[in-house]
Image (tube, rainbow, N blue to C red):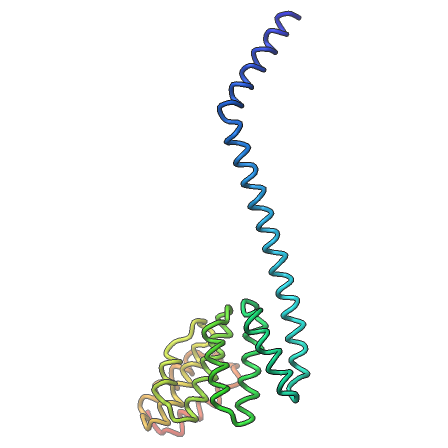
Length: 209
């Protein structure tokens, strides 16, 4: 029993020595880890709250199209307070479409440029580039439009970008360039793509072999 007590005392002494050497460092690591975990969970909770609030505002926006002041206020709130959420970019895309349909091309350009600069989702940025290129095409700003649709960020948009390049080049009277762009679009499109026939017709009309 005495031997056992002595062994126990030695172990306790070793533990005390180890704690004096490493205890504070270990405690610091544990506290740091706990603080990091708390910060992470807090951030996650805040993000979920932001997304939920943005979703509510986006839903409100859908019913405010006929009330310009309310629509503008809700849109501005989404873009300023919730721009990190996908709802802000989607709202700006919708606002651009509405502005264009109402004949306000300048407002449409502003909203689309905002999406290109702020959207987190690649597909939303590419969608905005295509729509802005279309607006610029109508304004005969061909070079600006071509710059936008040089190449997409998302590969699945390659055919749409190529088709838009073809439309812009054709408007510039660059028939060979337009034909090349349409061929690129056709090569990228699946055989069952709904717009394949349209692009083929655009190419056929050019009469370029």
